[in-house]
Length: 320
Image 1: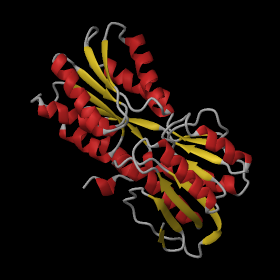
Image 2 (image 1 turned 180 degrees about the horizontal axis):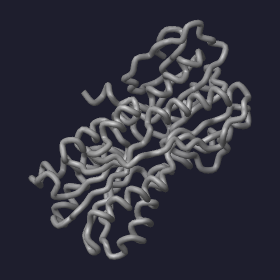
Image 3 (image 1 turned 45 degrees about the vertical axis):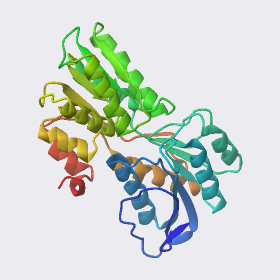
């Protein structure tokens, strides 16, 4: 274990590219865990930063852990065990598998350790709160935007994230259900991934080669958006020929929006997800009553409001 100062410990491997500051007179008598995903992208950098900042401001000791690789369930379970062994009184977690993580959450709950799900829900185990975006509503908004820029019988690509996670399932289902209502004759070509940019780029490239008349691409997260743009560039598509909408509000995707490669993005409040997740876990550790669900909200980001969205959501340091 690498120990950082006296307040925040980082267990196992997790790429936290943030400044780990410390609250004055930190109270290490309260220990809280934060088990994140091993997702090396800007979206998770922001979520993780919010988590760390919440602990620093509260003056508690935060144990930060994560799986050794993207989607590694066994490794994330081990991370939870380690956080519990080091005395965590509550855990905020972004599960890599909504169902697979449930058994250890149930076991911990029997010991009186409350869990707060961040970004992605947990199926089949008691949690004290879910903190994150209403993914069904956000995906419906994504489909509504896309329906407004395509024809009635067009072909579109949908780049999905992991369907082992409730966030991936909800973003897919919300999008498909709403698009079916608005454009029932559109053909949807699905690309399945485990939330990796390389899978997204390869899948979009494959579909564009098979269907060069695709008119739009929707993505379940913004590394997928980056991969879709890379595929268009590789295949020499001109900027704007295929309309693209992302999902996350990650700074690198918003830079592509400003450059004209994508036209819209469903912007999550990523920093707030991490911040509110750990803040809620701290409250639960103290025995306080917490809301069963905290909707951190989303906003449709377009060229007209991208600067304001960036300023409002702790993105300025990433947008230079």
